[in-house]
Image 1 (cartoon, one colour):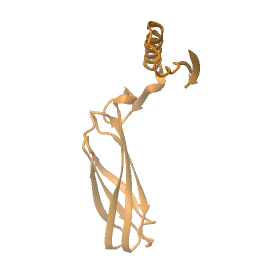
Image 2 (tube, one colour):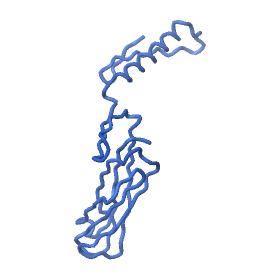
Image 3 (cartoon, one colour):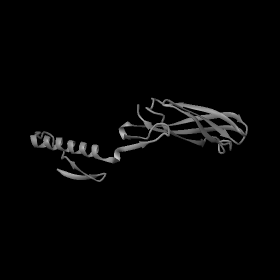
Image 4 (cartoon, helix red, strand yellow):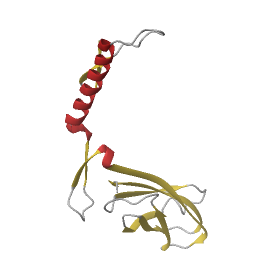
Length: 156
């Protein structure tokens, strides 16, 4: 058996059998032992936890398997906008979170007009299944932008 390093742990590398090689008890023991070692090391590490605090529920410390990430882009377009106007947008998550997630929104100007450059985004509502917001702009003209959303929370 050969050893290799992964994330600060020594992991056994099981030699691959040759075609036609009989599988004996020693070889099967090596496989079972390596799987058990890997399972123990993964379960005991503190590096596989996320801390999620949405400001409403108590902070949640969950495993990576219980953490849910959603990233999406919502197009926002308008033929004509005036200074200090706003346009609503919403996004429904593909599946619900257990608690309201932490959501970050960023405006990306996809048009050639400067109206998108001066745009800002404000999130108005975040639930377990949806996020709503407003795009506010200080310029005038046609608008073409995307609101990029990243939601991180506890899987349902």
